[in-house]
Image (cartoon, rainbow over all chains, first blue to last red; front, side, top):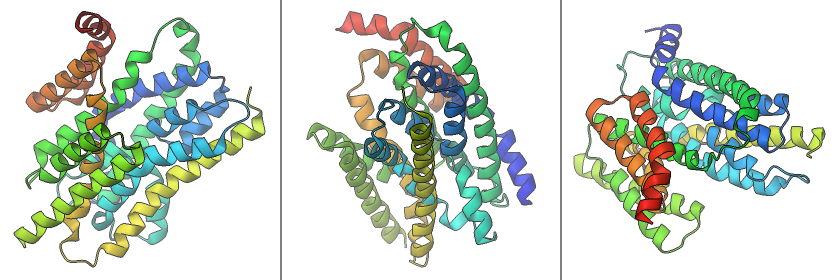
Length: 228
Length: 105
Protein backbone atom coordinates (compact mmCIF):
# COMPACT_ATOMS: atom_id res chain seq x y z
CA UNK A 1 0.00 0.00 0.00
CA UNK A 2 1.41 3.43 -0.94
CA UNK A 3 2.03 6.20 1.57
CA UNK A 4 -0.87 8.23 0.21
CA UNK A 5 -3.25 5.25 0.38
CA UNK A 6 -2.09 4.55 3.93
CA UNK A 7 -2.62 8.19 4.91
CA UNK A 8 -6.13 8.03 3.48
CA UNK A 9 -6.74 4.82 5.46
CA UNK A 10 -5.60 6.67 8.61
CA UNK A 11 -8.05 9.47 7.88
CA UNK A 12 -10.90 7.02 7.22
CA UNK A 13 -10.27 5.00 10.39
CA UNK A 14 -9.95 8.06 12.62
CA UNK A 15 -13.70 8.72 12.94
CA UNK A 16 -14.04 7.49 16.52
CA UNK A 17 -11.22 9.56 17.91
CA UNK A 18 -12.15 12.50 15.67
CA UNK A 19 -15.32 12.81 17.78
CA UNK A 20 -13.51 12.30 21.12
CA UNK A 21 -10.92 14.90 20.13
CA UNK A 22 -13.70 17.25 19.07
CA UNK A 23 -15.24 17.13 22.55
CA UNK A 24 -11.85 17.91 24.09
CA UNK A 25 -11.25 20.74 21.64
CA UNK A 26 -14.54 22.43 22.50
CA UNK A 27 -13.62 22.16 26.19
CA UNK A 28 -10.17 23.58 25.47
CA UNK A 29 -11.66 26.53 23.57
CA UNK A 30 -14.05 27.29 26.44
CA UNK A 31 -11.28 27.06 29.04
CA UNK A 32 -8.85 29.11 26.93
CA UNK A 33 -11.43 31.85 26.58
CA UNK A 34 -12.10 31.75 30.33
CA UNK A 35 -8.42 32.26 31.22
CA UNK A 36 -8.12 35.18 28.81
CA UNK A 37 -6.43 33.79 25.69
CA UNK A 38 -7.31 35.66 22.53
CA UNK A 39 -8.79 33.58 19.69
CA UNK A 40 -5.68 33.69 17.53
CA UNK A 41 -3.49 32.74 20.50
CA UNK A 42 -5.60 29.68 21.36
CA UNK A 43 -5.73 28.62 17.70
CA UNK A 44 -1.98 29.13 17.27
CA UNK A 45 -1.37 27.04 20.39
CA UNK A 46 -3.60 24.24 19.04
CA UNK A 47 -1.92 24.40 15.63
CA UNK A 48 1.68 24.40 16.86
CA UNK A 49 1.50 22.22 19.98
CA UNK A 50 -1.29 19.83 18.93
CA UNK A 51 -1.47 18.24 22.36
CA UNK A 52 -4.65 18.28 24.42
CA UNK A 53 -3.08 17.32 27.75
CA UNK A 54 -0.12 19.71 27.37
CA UNK A 55 -2.35 22.63 26.40
CA UNK A 56 -4.73 22.06 29.30
CA UNK A 57 -1.72 21.87 31.65
CA UNK A 58 -0.42 25.21 30.34
CA UNK A 59 -3.77 26.91 30.86
CA UNK A 60 -3.56 26.08 34.58
CA UNK A 61 -0.68 28.57 34.84
CA UNK A 62 -1.69 31.13 32.19
CA UNK A 63 -1.42 34.47 33.97
CA UNK A 64 0.75 37.58 33.87
CA UNK A 65 3.68 37.38 34.31
CA UNK A 66 3.82 34.02 32.52
CA UNK A 67 5.67 31.42 34.62
CA UNK A 68 7.69 30.01 31.71
CA UNK A 69 9.62 27.42 33.73
CA UNK A 70 6.47 26.04 35.36
CA UNK A 71 4.64 25.82 32.03
CA UNK A 72 7.69 24.24 30.36
CA UNK A 73 8.01 21.59 33.07
CA UNK A 74 4.31 20.72 33.18
CA UNK A 75 4.06 20.53 29.37
CA UNK A 76 7.18 18.35 29.27
CA UNK A 77 5.91 16.00 31.97
CA UNK A 78 2.54 15.39 30.34
CA UNK A 79 4.29 15.00 26.97
CA UNK A 80 6.79 12.40 28.14
CA UNK A 81 4.56 9.67 26.77
CA UNK A 82 5.43 11.08 23.30
CA UNK A 83 8.96 9.81 23.92
CA UNK A 84 7.53 6.32 24.34
CA UNK A 85 5.17 6.64 21.36
CA UNK A 86 8.13 7.70 19.21
CA UNK A 87 10.21 4.80 20.45
CA UNK A 88 7.37 2.37 19.74
CA UNK A 89 7.32 3.52 16.11
CA UNK A 90 11.07 3.04 15.57
CA UNK A 91 10.74 -0.11 13.49
CA UNK A 92 7.66 1.07 11.61
CA UNK A 93 8.76 4.26 9.82
CA UNK A 94 11.48 2.70 7.68
CA UNK A 95 11.58 3.32 3.94
CA UNK A 96 11.16 7.09 4.19
CA UNK A 97 13.78 9.83 4.02
CA UNK A 98 15.02 11.17 7.34
CA UNK A 99 13.73 14.63 6.42
CA UNK A 100 10.23 13.29 5.87
CA UNK A 101 10.27 11.34 9.11
CA UNK A 102 11.41 14.41 11.04
CA UNK A 103 8.73 16.60 9.47
CA UNK A 104 5.88 14.13 9.78
CA UNK A 105 6.66 13.25 13.39
CA UNK A 106 5.04 16.60 14.16
CA UNK A 107 1.69 14.83 13.73
CA UNK A 108 2.54 11.84 15.93
CA UNK A 109 -0.58 11.17 18.01
CA UNK A 110 -1.67 8.59 20.58
CA UNK A 111 -4.69 7.05 18.85
CA UNK A 112 -2.86 6.93 15.52
CA UNK A 113 0.01 4.96 17.06
CA UNK A 114 -2.28 2.68 19.08
CA UNK A 115 -4.54 1.82 16.13
CA UNK A 116 -1.56 1.42 13.75
CA UNK A 117 -0.70 -1.82 15.53
CA UNK A 118 -4.05 -3.25 14.40
CA UNK A 119 -3.75 -2.58 10.66
CA UNK A 120 -2.25 -4.96 8.11
CA UNK A 121 1.52 -5.21 7.72
CA UNK A 122 1.29 -3.90 4.14
CA UNK A 123 0.08 -0.50 5.40
CA UNK A 124 2.74 2.21 5.45
CA UNK A 125 2.78 3.16 9.14
CA UNK A 126 4.23 6.66 8.71
CA UNK A 127 1.54 7.47 6.15
CA UNK A 128 -1.16 5.95 8.33
CA UNK A 129 -0.16 7.80 11.52
CA UNK A 130 0.23 11.06 9.58
CA UNK A 131 -3.19 10.68 7.94
CA UNK A 132 -4.67 9.97 11.35
CA UNK A 133 -2.85 13.04 12.67
CA UNK A 134 -4.22 15.28 9.90
CA UNK A 135 -7.72 14.19 10.83
CA UNK A 136 -7.05 14.81 14.55
CA UNK A 137 -5.61 18.24 13.72
CA UNK A 138 -8.72 19.22 11.72
CA UNK A 139 -10.91 18.08 14.60
CA UNK A 140 -8.74 19.83 17.21
CA UNK A 141 -8.63 23.19 15.39
CA UNK A 142 -12.30 23.23 14.40
CA UNK A 143 -13.48 22.31 17.87
CA UNK A 144 -11.12 24.82 19.53
CA UNK A 145 -12.65 27.55 17.36
CA UNK A 146 -16.17 26.43 18.24
CA UNK A 147 -15.30 26.28 21.95
CA UNK A 148 -13.84 29.80 21.83
CA UNK A 149 -17.00 31.15 20.23
CA UNK A 150 -19.37 29.21 22.49
CA UNK A 151 -17.54 30.07 25.71
CA UNK A 152 -20.08 32.71 26.72
CA UNK A 153 -22.81 30.03 26.81
CA UNK A 154 -20.90 28.11 29.47
CA UNK A 155 -19.87 31.03 31.64
CA UNK A 156 -21.90 29.75 34.60
CA UNK A 157 -21.44 26.02 33.95
CA UNK A 158 -19.17 23.90 36.14
CA UNK A 159 -16.94 21.90 33.79
CA UNK A 160 -14.92 20.43 36.66
CA UNK A 161 -16.44 16.97 36.26
CA UNK A 162 -15.32 16.78 32.64
CA UNK A 163 -11.65 17.07 33.60
CA UNK A 164 -11.72 13.28 34.07
CA UNK A 165 -12.51 12.87 30.36
CA UNK A 166 -8.76 12.63 29.64
CA UNK A 167 -8.30 9.38 31.58
CA UNK A 168 -11.51 8.04 29.96
CA UNK A 169 -10.08 8.52 26.46
CA UNK A 170 -6.77 6.97 27.54
CA UNK A 171 -8.76 4.00 28.87
CA UNK A 172 -10.35 3.44 25.44
CA UNK A 173 -6.85 3.28 23.92
CA UNK A 174 -5.66 0.94 26.66
CA UNK A 175 -8.56 -1.38 25.97
CA UNK A 176 -7.63 -1.44 22.27
CA UNK A 177 -4.16 -2.52 23.36
CA UNK A 178 -5.50 -5.22 25.68
CA UNK A 179 -7.89 -6.65 23.11
CA UNK A 180 -5.36 -6.79 20.29
CA UNK A 181 -2.20 -7.89 22.02
CA UNK A 182 -0.57 -11.08 20.81
CA UNK A 183 1.57 -11.33 23.95
CA UNK A 184 0.49 -11.53 27.60
CA UNK A 185 -0.25 -7.98 28.82
CA UNK A 186 1.89 -8.49 31.92
CA UNK A 187 4.17 -5.42 31.36
CA UNK A 188 1.15 -3.11 31.35
CA UNK A 189 -0.35 -4.71 34.45
CA UNK A 190 2.96 -4.45 36.28
CA UNK A 191 3.25 -0.78 35.25
CA UNK A 192 -0.24 -0.12 36.60
CA UNK A 193 0.49 -1.93 39.89
CA UNK A 194 3.81 -0.10 40.29
CA UNK A 195 2.12 3.25 39.60
CA UNK A 196 -0.49 2.51 42.27
CA UNK A 197 2.17 1.55 44.78
CA UNK A 198 4.24 4.66 44.07
CA UNK A 199 1.13 6.82 44.26
CA UNK A 200 0.33 5.37 47.70
CA UNK A 201 3.90 6.10 48.77
CA UNK A 202 3.39 9.75 47.80
CA UNK A 203 5.89 9.80 44.91
CA UNK A 204 5.73 12.83 42.57
CA UNK A 205 4.04 12.36 39.20
CA UNK A 206 7.22 12.27 37.12
CA UNK A 207 8.72 9.58 39.36
CA UNK A 208 5.54 7.50 39.16
CA UNK A 209 5.69 7.64 35.36
CA UNK A 210 9.41 6.92 35.17
CA UNK A 211 9.58 4.05 37.64
CA UNK A 212 6.36 2.31 36.70
CA UNK A 213 7.24 2.38 32.98
CA UNK A 214 10.66 1.08 33.99
CA UNK A 215 9.03 -1.81 35.85
CA UNK A 216 6.94 -2.63 32.77
CA UNK A 217 10.04 -2.56 30.55
CA UNK A 218 11.84 -5.01 32.84
CA UNK A 219 8.91 -7.43 32.54
CA UNK A 220 8.77 -6.94 28.74
CA UNK A 221 12.49 -7.75 28.49
CA UNK A 222 12.01 -10.82 30.70
CA UNK A 223 9.09 -11.99 28.52
CA UNK A 224 11.15 -11.51 25.37
CA UNK A 225 14.13 -13.41 26.81
CA UNK A 226 11.88 -16.33 27.77
CA UNK A 227 10.31 -16.38 24.32
CA UNK A 228 13.67 -16.13 22.54
CA UNK B 1 -3.74 40.07 31.16
CA UNK B 2 -0.81 38.41 29.39
CA UNK B 3 0.84 40.68 26.82
CA UNK B 4 1.11 39.55 23.22
CA UNK B 5 4.87 39.04 23.15
CA UNK B 6 4.88 36.89 26.30
CA UNK B 7 1.96 34.84 24.99
CA UNK B 8 3.72 34.20 21.68
CA UNK B 9 6.93 33.21 23.44
CA UNK B 10 5.06 30.77 25.70
CA UNK B 11 3.13 29.26 22.78
CA UNK B 12 6.27 28.64 20.72
CA UNK B 13 8.13 27.32 23.75
CA UNK B 14 5.32 24.79 24.32
CA UNK B 15 5.35 23.78 20.64
CA UNK B 16 9.11 23.23 20.74
CA UNK B 17 8.93 21.08 23.88
CA UNK B 18 6.13 18.88 22.54
CA UNK B 19 7.76 18.45 19.12
CA UNK B 20 11.11 17.61 20.71
CA UNK B 21 9.51 14.87 22.84
CA UNK B 22 8.05 13.37 19.64
CA UNK B 23 11.40 13.53 17.83
CA UNK B 24 13.60 12.46 20.73
CA UNK B 25 11.71 9.24 21.45
CA UNK B 26 11.95 8.21 17.82
CA UNK B 27 15.68 8.93 17.63
CA UNK B 28 16.38 7.12 20.93
CA UNK B 29 14.54 4.17 19.42
CA UNK B 30 16.74 4.36 16.30
CA UNK B 31 19.82 4.10 18.52
CA UNK B 32 18.42 1.06 20.31
CA UNK B 33 17.01 -0.81 17.32
CA UNK B 34 20.13 -2.90 16.70
CA UNK B 35 19.60 -4.67 20.05
CA UNK B 36 18.16 -8.11 19.42
CA UNK B 37 14.59 -8.55 20.69
CA UNK B 38 14.09 -4.83 21.39
CA UNK B 39 11.07 -4.40 19.08
CA UNK B 40 8.40 -5.96 21.38
CA UNK B 41 9.90 -4.14 24.35
CA UNK B 42 9.63 -0.76 22.58
CA UNK B 43 6.09 -1.57 21.47
CA UNK B 44 5.07 -2.28 25.08
CA UNK B 45 6.10 1.26 26.13
CA UNK B 46 2.95 3.28 25.25
CA UNK B 47 0.73 0.80 27.12
CA UNK B 48 3.01 1.03 30.16
CA UNK B 49 2.79 4.83 30.05
CA UNK B 50 -1.01 4.79 29.74
CA UNK B 51 -1.30 2.43 32.73
CA UNK B 52 1.10 4.60 34.75
CA UNK B 53 -1.19 7.58 34.15
CA UNK B 54 -4.50 5.71 34.49
CA UNK B 55 -3.94 3.75 37.71
CA UNK B 56 -3.33 6.78 39.99
CA UNK B 57 -6.12 8.72 38.24
CA UNK B 58 -8.63 5.98 39.02
CA UNK B 59 -7.25 5.53 42.56
CA UNK B 60 -7.93 9.17 43.42
CA UNK B 61 -11.15 9.34 41.38
CA UNK B 62 -14.52 10.12 42.92
CA UNK B 63 -17.28 7.44 42.88
CA UNK B 64 -18.75 9.12 39.79
CA UNK B 65 -15.41 9.06 37.99
CA UNK B 66 -14.81 5.42 38.88
CA UNK B 67 -18.31 4.52 37.64
CA UNK B 68 -17.62 6.38 34.38
CA UNK B 69 -14.32 4.53 33.98
CA UNK B 70 -16.04 1.18 34.64
CA UNK B 71 -18.62 1.97 31.92
CA UNK B 72 -15.88 2.85 29.42
CA UNK B 73 -13.90 -0.33 30.13
CA UNK B 74 -17.00 -2.52 29.96
CA UNK B 75 -18.27 -1.01 26.69
CA UNK B 76 -14.82 -1.21 25.11
CA UNK B 77 -14.50 -4.82 26.23
CA UNK B 78 -17.86 -5.77 24.75
CA UNK B 79 -18.02 -3.65 21.61
CA UNK B 80 -14.71 -1.87 20.87
CA UNK B 81 -16.82 1.21 20.10
CA UNK B 82 -14.82 4.28 21.11
CA UNK B 83 -17.60 6.80 20.49
CA UNK B 84 -20.23 4.91 22.52
CA UNK B 85 -17.72 4.22 25.30
CA UNK B 86 -16.51 7.85 25.54
CA UNK B 87 -20.04 9.24 25.19
CA UNK B 88 -21.40 6.98 27.91
CA UNK B 89 -18.46 7.73 30.18
CA UNK B 90 -18.95 11.48 29.74
CA UNK B 91 -22.70 11.17 30.34
CA UNK B 92 -22.07 9.25 33.57
CA UNK B 93 -19.51 11.88 34.60
CA UNK B 94 -21.80 14.84 33.92
CA UNK B 95 -25.18 13.52 35.00
CA UNK B 96 -24.52 10.55 37.29
CA UNK B 97 -21.27 11.80 38.80
CA UNK B 98 -22.60 14.52 41.11
CA UNK B 99 -25.45 12.26 42.26
CA UNK B 100 -23.15 9.27 42.93
CA UNK B 101 -20.65 11.48 44.73
CA UNK B 102 -23.33 12.89 47.03
CA UNK B 103 -24.88 9.46 47.74
CA UNK B 104 -21.59 7.68 48.51
CA UNK B 105 -20.02 10.63 50.35
